[in-house]
Each structure stands twice: as C-alpha cells, then as structure tokens.
Amino acid sequence: MEDKKINAAQSDSFQKVQNMSQSIEVLNLRTQRDFQYIMRMESQIKGLRSKFRQIESDRKTVANKNFQELKGKMESLQPLIPVLEQYKTDAKLISLFKEEIRNLSSVLMGIQEEMGAYDYEELQQRVLNLENRLHSCMNKLTCGKLMKITGPQTVKTSGTRFGAWMTDPVASPKNNRVWYMDSYTNNKIVKEYKSIHDFVAGVESRTYNLPFKWAGTNHVVYNGSLYYNKMQSNIIVRYSFETGRVITQRALESAGFHNVYPYTWGGFSDIDLMADELGLWAVYATNQNAGNIVISRLNPDTLQILDTWNTEYSKRNAGESFMICGTLYITNSHLTGAKVYYAYSTKTSTYEYTDIPFHNQYFHMSMLDYNARDRALYGWNNGHQVLFNVTLFHIIKTEDDS
Image 1 (tube, rainbow, N blue to C red):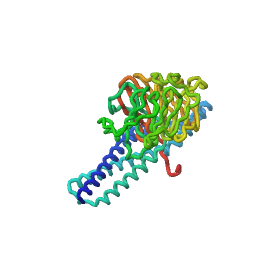
Image 2: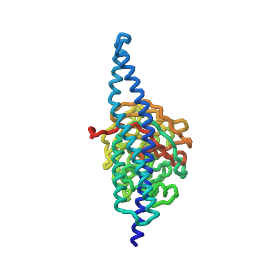
Image 3: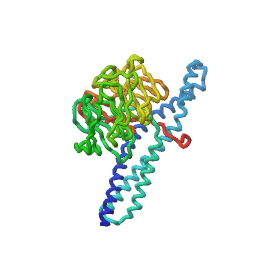
Image 4: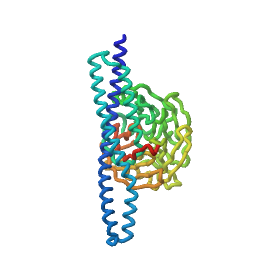
C-alpha cells in the first residue's frame, strides 16, 4: 500500500516537472526571440549615441534644428539602456532554470528505477521551490507590445467553417478546460473538455445548453463564466459554468448588431468580447462613431461599461481584432494575406499603423482571440482550431517599480 502511495506521489511530481519543463521551454523560446530583437535595438542605440557624440563635437557642421531633434531622440532612448541590461540578466536566469529542470528530471528518472530510494518530501520541496522561482521570473515581465506572430499550430479539425474555442485565461494552472462553440448563429450548445488532450481526442466532459442562442463567434470565457452576444440583440450575457445559469445580462447601448457592423466576413460578428491582462473588453461599432470601432472596458461582474474609447477604424473593414495589454490589434482581412494593420492603445488614446503578418493557413479566419495565460492567439481557421505564438517586447519590472 505504501509503495503505491509513493509511486503515485512520484508520478505526480514527475508530471509536474514535465509540465514545468514545457512551460520553461516555451518561455525560453519567446525570450530568445525577444532577446534577439533587444540586441539589435541595443546596437542601434549605441550607434546612435556614437553618432550623437560625433556631431556634438562639431555643432557648426549641423544645423541647430537637426541637432536638437537628434538630441531629443537620444534622450528618449537613454532609459532603455538599463532595461536592456536587466533583460540580459533575465535571459540568463531562464537558462539556469532550464538546466535545473534537466537535473531534477534526471533525479526523477532515477527514482522511477529505484522505488523508495529518495526522500519524497525533499523532492516535493525542490519542485515547489522551482515553481516559485519560475513564477517570480515570469512576474517580472510586464505588459508588452506585439512584435511578431508565428504559427499556426493546427490543434484539431472539426465543426463547420465558423466557430470558437477557448480556455479561461485567469483559471489556475491546474485548470486546463477547453470550451467549444460550433457555428456563428442558431446554436446554444457548448461542449466542455477537461484538457487540450481530451479536446483533440474528442472526449467531452460536459455539455451546456445555454438559455439563449448566440450571435457571431466572438465569445470569451473569463474567470469561470462565458460572455457572449445574445442572438438578434446587442445584449451581452454572462453565463456561469459552475451554476449552469445566467448571472447577468445587459444591453451594450448604441452597439450595432445582426450584421449592421460585422467584421469583413459577416456572420453577425458585430460585438466582439475579449479579455487580456487588464480585464474584460467589448469591441463594437455605433452610429454615433460613424461605424468605426468602439472599445469599452467592462466590469466582469455587472457588465457595466467602465471606460470607452472611439477609434477611427471602420468595423466593416476589419478582419478580426484582439486585445493585448490594453492595446487593440486589428487585422485588415479575414482572408489569405491578412496582417495586423492597426493598433490602438487605450493607455495613451493613440493609434499607429503596423505591419505584422500572420499565416492564414486555411484561407478564412472567423475567430482570433488572445489568451493572456498561454500568451497565444486562439483561432478558428475554416473549420480548423489553431494556435499562434506571439512575440511581445516586454519591459522588465525592477525592484524600484514595485
């Protein structure tokens, strides 16, 4: 009996270490991409600083106006120098974590070969300590700016051309449930899976029959509740998976609905609900804003609007959109050749045009949403459920910032 208990505990630790190893590997890959970008930026900054010093030594050769502009650029870049140095330190820290994971994995393999030859409690403590160090490292990464989208990875092929699938971005690490909502209208069946593995295998754990049919594919699961647009209305519904009941519903005043202001592909995609590191959002269009995109941050409990921003980007010209760290990124099409073309920051109430391509492998994108926990984009690509990795330019949080 004791051997079975030890064996089960050791298997649990081994699985945790494997999961952590995968998490660190993903974090390492993303860090290396960001690190390469930072190294290029550092080289440019140093080059600019050298050029600035050269020009400053002979001001007479340069018009005063040009000199002042260059000086301003240099001063704005100066604060990035300590950030770059801190980023290098964190990159080294992640490499050390990888090495420690390898060592711990070797210990666990040895335990499997020789049952009971190792102090399980000591091993468990090492795993917990490593988890704490990993979380501490990841918490140093504050919100970032989107730099690159890679993939996709095809997770599964199922359903109709249009639909949505998602996980809960604020769920605990042990909660990996997947929710699946096929079609963009005339449906109210939500399928639940305990994990991505079960989702791929088609092993359902539960089915929910919603009280109202949904419109579009732009739903989101956030903190245990499903938020969706009630069909043929601008009403947002919050449905609790735990109680199987609607907790609240509220009309999104002035929001167009039922293909008045959809994305380019149509499908009653007028109201897009999404979540990021800062909370719950609604993206839609109104007559008052001439059919251009409106962004509202919502109270996830009451669905009341906390704040609103009006953009100048036509909702009907947008392929899809998603929020990352309070910035709305908009694609210019749902078809092949699409790219992230426009970004609106709610922090500064400013926008910029971007050029970030992504591979629309199956030619028709009807759902694209960011998951802050996974740091990935979930997509429904012409009947294929896909994942995209995102590369963010992070600012490292130092002790002085806390």
